[in-house]
Each structure stands twice: as structure tokens, then as C-alpha cells.
Image (cartoon, one colour):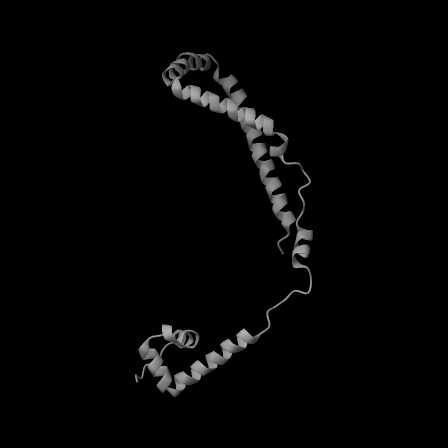
Length: 158
């Protein structure tokens, strides 16, 4: 027997899983009155916890929770616009595939035509075109964020 007592974790492991505990710890707990008293106290505690009745709700918990979850009455944008999304995806896919197979021709076209078109546009006109586009984009992001916050607040987690 050693004079060093096993830790509380080892004593708990001895009570819960005696074969999983080390041989030195088992022999010490068996011979030491202080450690044996701790092990008996833990065993009584664990048995008391196991004997407690399982908590049960006396009401319909799923029903109470589902009443607080708001139903989305707005029709889904995806369901309304499936044909539009499919057509857009098909056009983008076709353009992407054509661009991949005709890469040299597309690059030559862009260098020749698009750069010459943009080089003839004054900077002021470009700024007048880019400014409203960026403003609309910013307002759309803000609106999306507010809509998200409203949905989160409607959940009422507390």
C-alpha cells in the first residue's frame, strides 16, 4: 500500500468501472479506509442519481414550441421563379461551355471590341453608370440583412 492517495477521478473511475481502473489504485482503495470511504460515498451518490425519476413534461412540448415558431406566409422566391432560374442557368451554362471551347476567339473578341468600346466612353459617364449600380447593391444588402434580423428576432429564443 502506498501513502499517496489516488485522485478523485481515479476513485470515481473505480466506482463506475472497476476493471478499467489500475491494479495499484484498486489495491490501495481496497486497503485504505479513507479512500474506501470516499469510494462508498461516490457509489451512494451515483446510485442516488440513477434512482431519481426521469423528468417528464406534463404538457405537449412540441406543440408549445411549434406555436412560437412563425409560419412563413410569404411564397418562396425560388418556387415562384423556377422557370426563370432554370433558363438563366441554361444560358449561363451554354455561354460558359461555348467560351471554354472557343477560348482563343473569345479572348480576341474581348480585346478587339470591348476594350475599344470602353476606351471611347468618358470617365464621367462610367462613374455615372457605376454609382447607381453600387448604390442599388448596397441597399439590397442592407434590406437582406434587415430581413434576416427580423426573422431571427421572430424566433424569440428566450
